Structure formats: structure tokens, C-alpha cells
Image 1 (cartoon, rainbow, N blue to C red):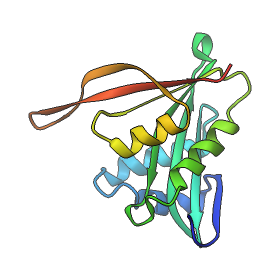
Image 2 (image 1 turned 135 degrees about the vertical axis):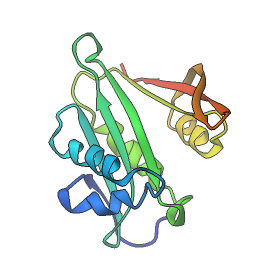
Image 3 (image 1 turned 90 degrees about the horizontal axis):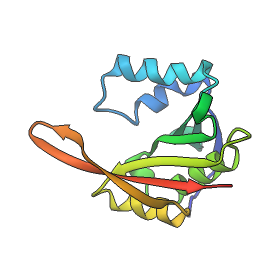
Image 4 (image 1 turned 30 degrees about the horizontal axis):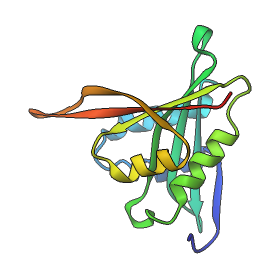
Length: 154
């Protein structure tokens, strides 16, 4: 489905500007700080999708520690609007999950209850719904629920 040279790899310093472009509504300095933090963290990993030299998506995984060291959380997965529906998010998720730290047994994630494309992707990848976090998002006076998903690996 993807036409061109799609490369999936770990984040590099040169990717920061391309990743910032995926979040046009975020506070730029805060988003840049969060993206750069991943460059130096052992508890976070960002896999980027680069298509013909352009950053078109990424997935961010965070790892638990201590009594939660068997857990990983998909914190963010996003593909540029112009490149959605081409299988890039699936490829990002598959790569990130296949390369989790040793000892990870469960992968967790959540998404808004009305994000049909994300729900379809996560269920296609074998995630199962285990709960709902009511009023997880608030914009003005409007609330949205998040659906909680997990994938048990072992």
C-alpha cells in the first residue's frame, strides 16, 4: 500500500522538526522538549516512519519500572494526514512491539472512544479492550471517554 521507500527506525536528532510537524496544535516548545527527551531516555522509545526522506509518522513506547517492569505502554502513534490509510501505522506498531525490551509481558494503550480507525488498528493487531476511562479528555465543557486496551505477549 505504501508507495516509495518506507524506512522504520529509531528516532534521531535530525527527526525533531519532522516530528513537531505531526503535532501542529501542540505547544511547540513543550512538544520539542518531550520529543528530545526520548533521544536520551532508556524508559522511552520512538520509532519513526520516514518515506522518501520525509518523517510521516511515529510510535512512542514507554517502559514501566520496578513492579511495573513487565509493562510497556504505547503512548502515542500518529501518521501524517496525507499518508493515512496506507498501512504505515500498522507497520510502526508491529515493529515497535516486535522489538520491545526483554521481559515485557503486556502492552497497554488507550484511545478516544470515537477514534474508529485507531480502534480498528489495535484490534487487528490483537489488542483486547479491558475497560473505559470515563471523562479522560476535556476540551472546553466537552468530555470524551478513552477505551483501554492490552495485548498479553506471554
